[in-house]
Length: 256
Image (cartoon, rainbow, N blue to C red; front, side, top):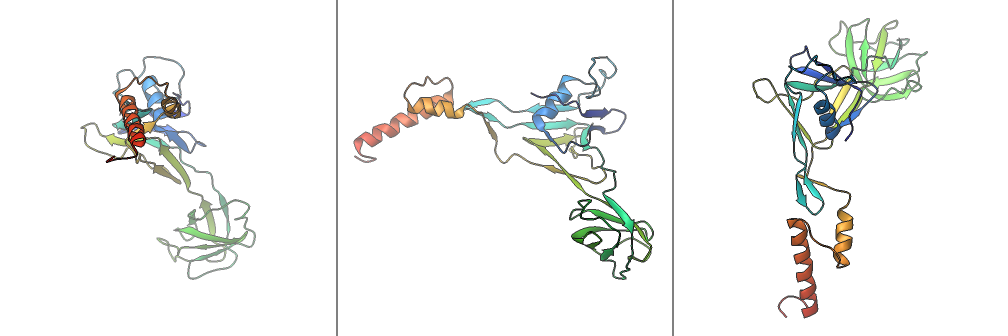
């Protein structure tokens, strides 16, 4: 159980927004649940004032029931008339002025650029502020050159000498450790995620209905050593299967 201190709830929004502060790029659903259940106030506050006790809960979760053999049902958390957001990444990654034009709007050249030093990545957003056009980086050729997708939605959709550009990397953020869904105030489905500028949220859905505890190995070790006492239905089934397998082996296999 971990209560995160970098969460802030914007109660006045509809749906409400639970924002994870930069520079964090991930949160585990169990931690999200623990943080929002432990305090219905601003999640970043340490006190227990009564300011928001009349607000509806932000999250409800189910799962983690023990089904034996060191396994538990996976977690599914439901954001209740609220959405998770990662703080916008508004700091410019790189910027400059075009020194060699490209009428095709696909080759950004700035002799004084620092694209490599600034760690500009594939997929970064490029805005030509002079032309009011926008595109994305395909690859970095060197400090002063990038190949982009063609400029769009601008006046000329070109790189012209003297054009001022700015680049923002898209920061990938992840919500993991189970499944996250959302309901609005009328219990209709809605996205549990609020998109923010220059972030991309990946929700790692659970491919399995179960979670495995760390002590599962110790159970099997004890089982094979013949000194285990089953304390769940699942463990009793496993013990019965192992005993039956050994009986078959002693008889020389099935059908003997």
